[in-house]
Length: 94
Image 1 (tube, rainbow, N blue to C red):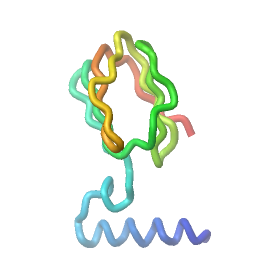
Image 2: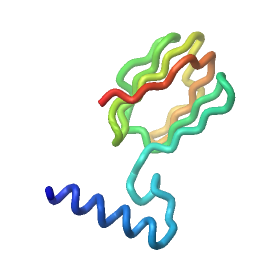
Image 3: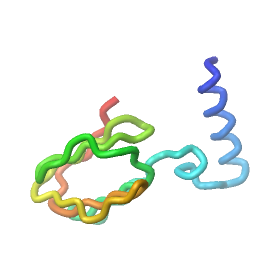
């Protein structure tokens, strides 16, 4: 087993034992979708592409592609990002 996999397994076990949120201890993205019009992601790593029809973000799980129409970046911080508009699909690209 690779050293990174060992560290990841230790963090997962530690998180489970102490019942800590995985998005915090493992630095995973936390995605919240409200209906088809609001999308929020915490723990993103940056924007790769932005248009009114597509947003691509880097995360620790890979690239997240959001497609829709009238997409607008409502809020952007170093850790959080909010998108409004009509969301048609979300897809993780590895």
